[in-house]
Image 1 (cartoon, helix red, strand yellow):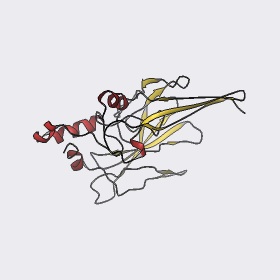
Image 2: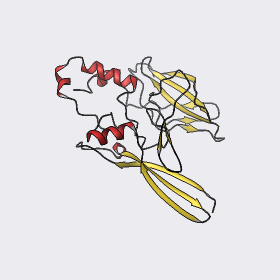
Image 3: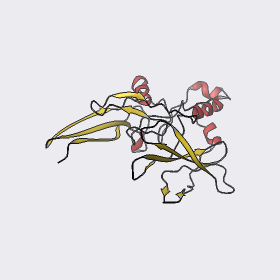
Length: 221
């Protein structure tokens, strides 16, 4: 048996008085299996994401999760501009969760660095480009067969469409390779869970589930 370390993560803890409706609402737990000369060592540790630390401190949700949103404060009901504030938080990435329960390093808000020996959360991975760190992207980025590049799709909420983005291995710089407009008559890009890549083409399925700024305005109501 070869020596090496296998890392896996998934939802492991739920915090707050919400009636969680999906497995992905759980905060991430990292599991480590280390193979060493026929022996197996294991361990696990909660990922110290901002969303987890805030929920632990306040005993409730503080970020937009997979199927749940934080309960609005009473002041939001009295403030007619509270919805605008939610839009600002959304586009700045402030309100999005970073718990990473379906990706050890890559999250839909940004990236988190983890020490593979101790499973300690080191901090946030910083990108060296002009793209926003909090961009929402497809749930399943693709790593090329040569393991030299990672590809993903990023929805454009301002000019409805999809951007095809690549990043080379050992790099922290993302590059927009191409852009595809939404289908004619569509009022917003769809949420792309996964996509396909052939030798010459990128296949983008347009799902009926779409991003809606008008719905975002109602998040606090």
